[in-house]
Amino acid sequence: MTSEISADVRAAVEAAKADVCALHAYLPAAELVAWTSGNVSARVPGADLMVIKPSGLEYADLTPASMVVCDLYGNRVEGDYAPSSDTGSHAYVYRHRPDVNGVVHTHSPYATSWAARAEAIPCCLTAIADEFGGDIPVGPFALIGDEAIGEGIVETLEGSNSPAVLMRNHGVFTIGASARAAVKAAVMVEDAARTVHLARLLGPVTRLDDADIASLHDRYTNVYGQKGAK
Ligand SMILES: [Zn+2]
Image 1: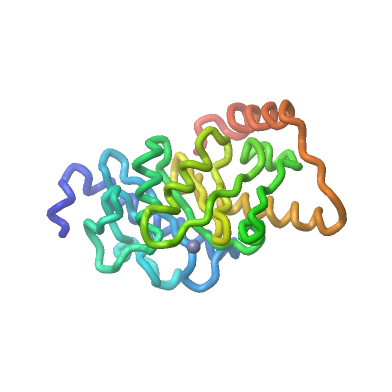
Image 2: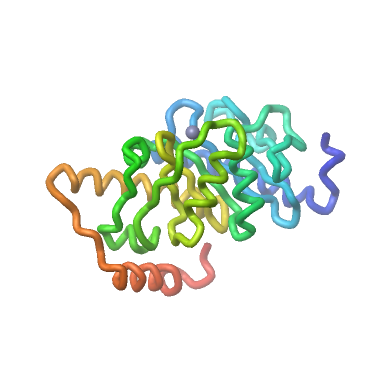
């Protein structure tokens, strides 16, 4: 199978395997996943390929070599294991969003509790305006196994600033310009979901004005942080 990967993209494939393997450590560390649920993928720069978690392997057992290389239709190109059952949906996102280079999926408990109720997380905190640029939206229900979830992700996030979508009755999908950015969004959506959940226990929350949300998101996106940092 290795013959299908040309020599000029080999280095990029190996780098993506190492990156995707290492990024998976954030999911259990941030308590976003239980057992083997959840997955990270990355687009291989310069090739119509992606690297994703193998299906059913425990997080502690993941190695760069156990990562699975697939084409952008979810077909395995290289790897000893079957890819994650969400591969078709990750692939669909990469095909339809050339700006996306990383996708993450979790069933992180607070965010997924909003997905279970099919309720968007209202943009009621500056941190949500910063990271998500508005409410964190709910996507449609879709069965696992083909591209249907991917279609729901792309459809819901079209025209939205949010890098996260709460897929109805399922869980969280996040996208990013890099796999690391998608992991960050997965951590931040859980944080937002937990805080708004806690606020709601004590009373109603107030959504920020659209103009303030736009201003906060713009500042965070274009001014905040270290220049050139990813
Ligand atoms: Zn899932």
